[in-house]
Image (tube, rainbow, N blue to C red; front, side, top):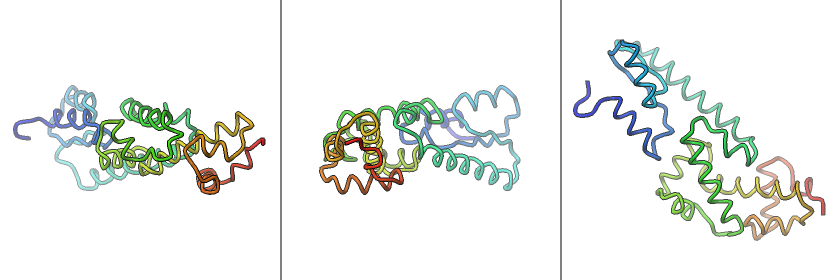
Length: 197
């Protein structure tokens, strides 16, 4: 048993905090009642293991949760900007990612809209933002911002006949050659493949 706060309360507090709400939680408990398990899941637990438990059982469950998370991140790396806004594993992650994407899009033309500005906009520390984005998307803050810029550039190129140099500037890249290199790294082909100009 825990001291002044229950495991359910700890679970609930971790789920409320922007820095920890994305972390998988396994409850280890002696409580066998179905209602206790339901309460644990309602507080945000990902798994519920009864004591006494074997080390193999705990490790297997941890490995499954980690692999499932990695698989999800790999899958999401190939999504479009629109689907990024709605496709995260839970509502809290979706809300956070929507806010982050919206903040970047609102400042898309500003070359110097960096990690520090995004953190300030989202009211979170830079290190907290980095950890959260890394856990949810697998990307650092800088790469996340760059990916949003490039996804927007891809949309513009597909929907208009703007020249590449203009599109580059519109999404915050002042150097068109750097934009083209970053675009190719992100999508596997150069922006000229999409350009109608």
